[in-house]
Length: 200
Length: 200
Image (tube, rainbow over all chains, first blue to last red; front, side, top):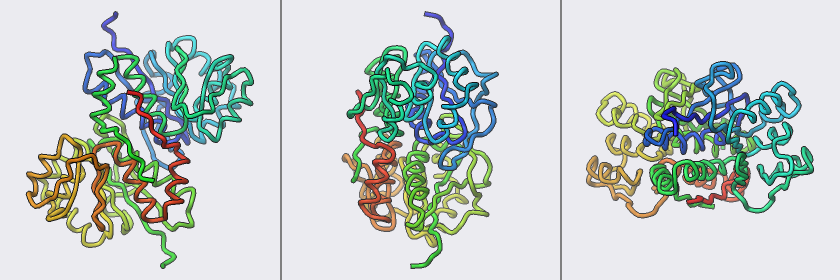
């Protein structure tokens, strides 16, 4: 194993859904900051590296641009209304395809998987998305084995897709489990006191 | 009931824990943006209105400063390492006390309640915080009825305190329930697909 720090990159873009990105950010940054010896780091990037206005209006300034970002071990593509223009943007889809050729593990939250589908990454694979976009996911690529049931995420080896918004937290904990082991994932879960009890 | 929009303000400060703020932001902004007729809006503010570097390095630019922010109906004080300097900052504690005199509902996530305690807001009241700070909360004010068990939040009328980090999501859904009804809170929960299943 190389001593090089392995990089996890969270993609930020205009109208990205806030919790799609920041839920996993919390899980992954809690992990990497508290356990640097595990050899991972997490950062954010946007196409031009400039501040992004998210879907609900939160403004986040990323660490990197497409041009300056490090080579990634794991890419996380959040969802949100901002994914819709990506579906018909050849340049963005080509960027996703190029990432696929170099990034070992491609992950998505919510409607991020729609972009993976449009880029052809999910052909003949199981995948999921936000419940309201399951039909759209299927229509983008009829060969996808769309998981419509109550799966928070679908791990298909070199690609992981998640259900809507808050499911990214569960998927990110799974990532920690997969990359650093179950005990580490439990420590992170305990750290962010993730013992959810929806009150309604 | 006045036609005026009632304002919910989320406080951002250096080293605020990301999910403490953005979990509730997602819940509350999903609600207020999709159901504007309910009469609420949510925004963020920092002391000087400038970009804040959060505890894990995310950089968020708030909507307002202390000077420019609207009068609040609900204030949300997140936690994070950034709360520790507040405990010994007379100016910040005086600001919290001043907010208490004008803001009908003061809420906190994680170690935000430590600042409420240091400002005297929790005397002779039930309250909670992140599990690792329960003793500190008690030491800041021995009259607090510290809830050490598995309570995600403690609603004591005009003040609500939450457990650690991710508990802010549960508390925010409770806020929607309290301010706009259970059916609305369920719609928000469904929208952000909050059916958590921690994988470990």
